[in-house]
Length: 192
Ligand SMILES: Cc1cc2nc3c(=O)[nH]c(=O)nc-3n(C[C@H](O)[C@H](O)[C@H](O)COP(=O)(O)O)c2cc1C
Image (cartoon, rainbow, N blue to C red; front, side):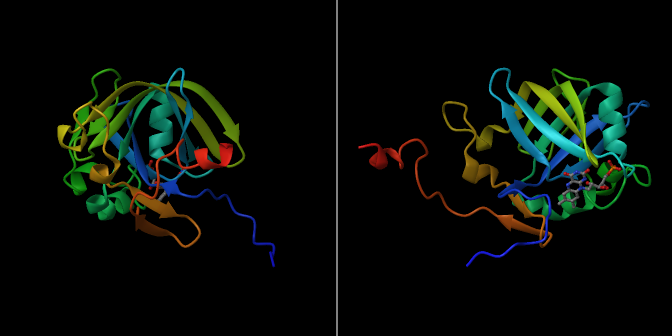
């Protein structure tokens, strides 16, 4: 039997990623986001959503610079990722506090966080206010990855990245489990 559940923004699985941008003084800001997803192949683009009713320094910096990076943290950095989501850049130099190294990205004027194994460099191409959040679409103009998470064709090996999954209902972080099937193949049996 199905029952109605309290309304809540939800999506499974949700990621825990880190958006970063420079403020007007050139200082690196970064905050943790669960509201983040891919949204276009051509051009390659991602969408992030940041609460505009609360004071988020990273939102201000992204809207100001119109460029940002999205880092994909691995599970070993769960503590640092949580900290970036519970403290504001208005109060602390968060990246210095956790000994993370922001470095200017190659193709955009935004900081890449060296400790993350894969990072997207994005230019803002669309902004929309939806309720409490500002949705920002960024065209991916470059991707940087550590060599040791790439296969011999330069593709990211998911298990080596070991990204963090997040459950916004219980406020919990999870490691992702093992591979279960090949996409675009496992369903072919139903086509017959
Ligand atoms: C796991 C996690 C996910 C979060 N996801 C979002 C999100 O998607 N959008 C948002 O506006 N804030 C989100 N936050 C909250 C911000 O990261 C937090 O308010 C942060 O302190 C903002 O920092 P800033 O002021 O330096 O930008 C999240 C926090 C955590 C811990």
